Length: 434
Ligand SMILES: Cc1ncc(COP(=O)(O)O)c(C=O)c1O
Image 1 (cartoon, rainbow, N blue to C red):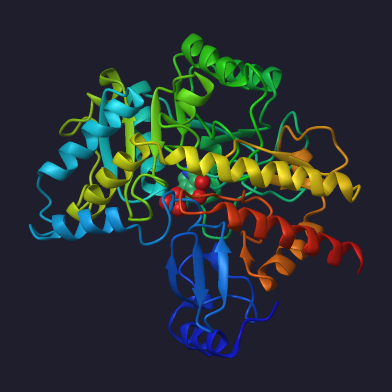
Image 2 (image 1 turned 30 degrees about the horizontal axis):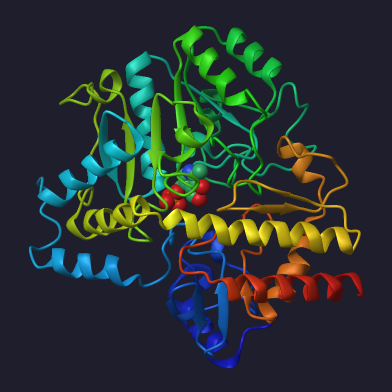
């Protein structure tokens, strides 16, 4: 679907000032298709040509209550009366940390500004705490833009080697190849490979960083007992388990994946869904690790960490989540997922609809289940992209990248779900009829 004339004109203007016309490579969909937003309200997004979309990208997930939420904005405007960035402690960040402690059961919280920062700091904390350097991650998991984990996020197959011993492939140029020595990446959901790699690298692994469900791979779920197995291995070998809850935190349950799956990480990173789209992230964990953050022990900081705007937005967002906002988020997502399954079955299209209600993902595949990146990679992603393009044309906006799930928010209505399912059915039929 080509964008409208005003959107295109604005995009070409953006390209003259910003590489690719976007401020994150993931946002570029080609010169003819990349949108420039005019405004967003509730569950909807409008482009420069005033074309309306039901938004299931929600800024890659964070807008859990809906765009321009009046309560969040009111709280932010009120808070801004006292200023914003002092680089000193203020009541909003204390209140926000207390709310996170109460909702998730963690001991201590430190704020950052993005998921990338949060995972980078969590890895440093794990290294400092253990005195070891190696990070173990999983193929297909993404933990942000720092060099330590930008390996095998979406590697070429067979370029990333044999699955029992994957070859690390960097996400892009500019990542020093020597950093690869500090990263082991293995398939998700395979206990035997995990245990062997940990034994082979005995005493050298600082942390296992894991997306408790693969929010960057169409919401692929952990096998029953898999997160418990990682927990057990970390306990046995003195490894810090980092639950990267940047996508799942405060979305799939009030207490995030720790509550949803009943497994505790040692360190947890949060970002999206914390502040309804205002830039805020957190690293949280037990006093035994977080308490080591001290002058010249474990260093953490940042000029904007815990500013008034972001923390007051988070206070309002967490209040709404505590008051039950996730019920709506889940109900909408469940209606979508059930509808997708029914339509796909009626059209005899082999596919898996997976993940929790608030972030369902779709994989077009003949397989009975998707357990790891290499399963997912065998899916028909061209078909996915074609369907999403048809959906966008008809006014529904999931991300075109088949790794992204459909994110739902509390502002999505029942009518939006009906509309979306009709659009999905029409789009699927259009692609099948081609
Ligand atoms: C699991 C996970 N960790 C970390 C990040 C990085 O977060 P940010 O984009 O805020 O830097 C993301 C972003 O999508 C993510 O999904």
